[in-house]
Image (tube, rainbow, N blue to C red; front, side, top):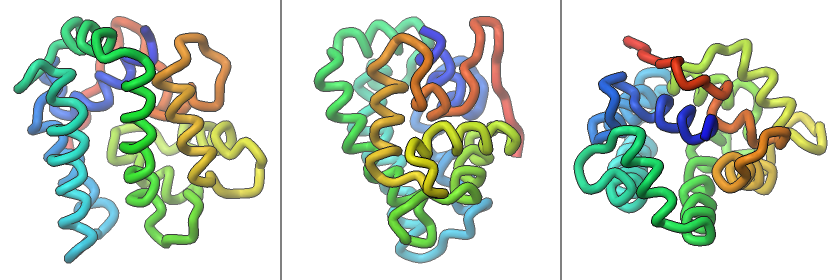
Length: 181
């Protein structure tokens, strides 16, 4: 439950207690602001967050327009683990391609720091997360390491996996994130 609470808090970018399309628009705007994406790259990121992350995946989990945490969890359970994990692999594959800004096939530490910054996660935690997800310790998070971390995060309720770090530190029930940019 801590992983899903943390996921919800990270995606509720405006901190209003609901996940909505606006939150995904804000994430896309932060990519433009912090990563200096322009042209086709910028269009692809906006398309990904609006038309894939929101419309294909989260909108159904949010009951159409918005979701409070309890509805989000209820809808995720209805979705089922197998379908949820398969969808996440698809989504995380695209996420990997966006995060791999230099297109070398690996997420480097500075690329993870950038992504975590967009989600409001402190840089100090990025280093710990990077080392946990770089399972073979070769200095980069490969596509497979990234996808496995996503599976661990969303499909393993227990803690103790490299994927525990996938969306930053796990938040306790009372913790709320609101980042103003």
